[in-house]
Structures are given as structure tokens and as C-alpha cells.
Length: 327
Image (cartoon, rainbow, N blue to C red; front, side, top):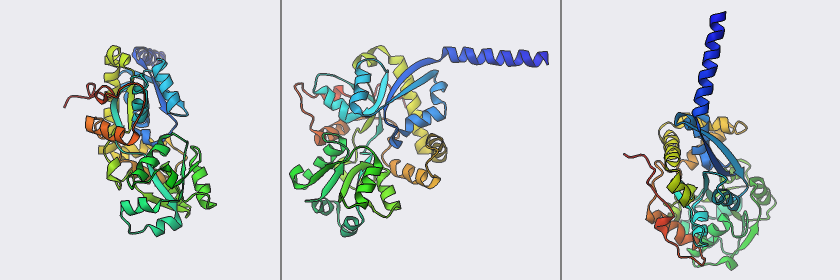
């Protein structure tokens, strides 16, 4: 019995010593969206700990709050939209993306059952044209959904005055309710809104950005790990470890989907197995396999966002691949 006590005490001391050696890393994440699967899998699978890191994740309600946390130095890096990196750059607040998590929009255009039926068999250009005069729900004026909608209808030569924007907030349920009540015809909103609309027989996916239906938005930097230039210069070892963590998590997503699905089930225990599997399959089309970014991808994002400000936009300074594992 005494020997057992000694062994337990020894194991406890060893665990404490290992924990003490772990390097803290502070992360900011926007909401608790499924697209950030790489982060959740890294947490659930203890990949941070494998690389000697102990993560603390702060969840905030939007991109501006995430940027504030990064710029203030309150966190080491954030999971943010590359849109915010570009917007900050032209305002003289440089940021650097160092791992591409998602290379397509995580939103789809969803629509009422009637509009989905009307568009059946049409090509993407005709579907865009059919949106003229329609009421389109988006989360907020000037937000990602608003900008994506404007860029989409501009492909057919339309402007915001050719549709009615309905600002409906971030809650998925509000779009489902609006479709049920006939208050909107369509919406540009993150999944699983389209899956839920179909499940509840009030609509479905109208234009599948995630699946690549609109080529303009197929290959870009969309959601990325982002830090300040100062952190990139002074925290090279830390960001190198972080990049290795996410590279392994993304590899699990692509090469071991059942393992990834199990981790996501732990992250979203209230989600049905069927919805978890379908949402994973949907977003797996947009998740990056290796985190690599290119100037062409950066330009594709900048071309549709058209960020404006008093400072020139130097795309090459807004991202780096230097921390990615060497092949």
C-alpha cells in the first residue's frame, strides 16, 4: 500500500512537472463556429500539449473585437477572417496571416423553397440574375455577408440598390424563422443554415459557395491564423509550434475523417450525428489541407472586398508561409 502511494505521488509530481514546462499560448476565436474545426480538433486531441503548449482560448462576438485583442497584445494570435487583415492594412494597422484554415467562404446563399424550385436547372449566372429585386438577409451592414452579397450580384452588373438587404443578425434561427414567415427570399449566411432550412422544409442551398459553384470565390485566403508583425518577429518559436499544431489538425481532417468527426462530436455534443457528419462533409470542401497561402489567393480576396483606406495595400506583407512545416 505504501509503495502504491509512492507511485501515485511520483506520477502526480511528473504530471505537474510536465504541466509546468508547457508554454502558454493565448488565442482569440470569433464565436464557436464549425469552420474553426482545426482549433477544436487540436484541443480535443491534445495536439497543443504534444508540442509543449497550453492554450487559453477567448471567444469574442465579431472580427473587430478579435482584431482589438490581437493588436493590443492580449493574445498571441487569432482565428480571424482575412478580410479583417486587409481592412486593417489599409488603415495602417498591419497584421500577418500565417496559416490558411479556410480557402472559400463558409457561407452559402440559401433561399426559400419557392426560389430554390424556380432556380432548379439554372447555371450560376442565371441564379445570380434571378436575385434581382429579391429580399436578401445578411447578418450586418458592412459585415462579411453584406460584402459577399455585393460582390456576388456585381458579377451580373447589379448593385445593392437592385436587391433589398435585410439585416438579420448572427443567429441562424432568425433566418429560418424569416424564411418560414416569408420575410426574406434568400440569405447569405454561414452553414449549417442551409442544412437546417432543408431539414425544416422552408428552403435550402441556392448557390453553393462552399462546394465551389461560383468560381470567383473558389480559391482565396478566407479564414486564417493571424498575428501582429511584432509577434511574427519576436515569437518565432511559439508561432512555429502553433503552425505545427494546426498542420497536424488539418491533416487529421483530410486523412482521418472519422477521427476528426469524433473530435467534433465532443466539441458539439448537442449536434446530431447526422448533422455533424453532413456539416463536416460540406465544410471539408473549404478547409485547407496544408495552410499554404499565395499572392494569387490574397489578390482573389482583395479583388472582391476592395478594401479602402489611407494606406497602400501591399499584399505580400499581409501573409507568410515561413512557419509551415518543411516538406
